[in-house]
Length: 115
Image (cartoon, rainbow, N blue to C red):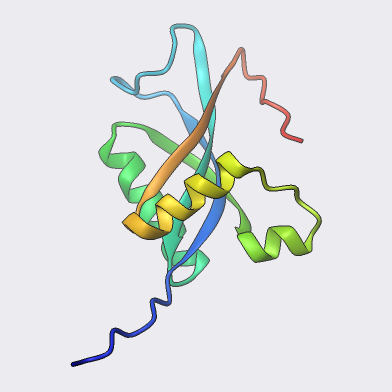
């Protein structure tokens, strides 16, 4: 029996800012949004590429991506990771997926503040 190679996939936490585009599904009056995303990839660059490609397919206009690293990197920086967040990250890994965990629209050019 052939042994399955261990996956090199990891899950990265990304903050993606999107602008407006026809059919994007954002609320009326919103000027854009911030999306907290968990995306799998062999490295952060792949996770970003896959995320941007999927967001474009979903008729959104990605403007900027900020990477916050893997679960281990975030924990090393002192981030508190709750059970719900851990479960979403595990799902992204198991499904080799891009998961939008949170969408925060912004209005009149304001940008949300994340803690």
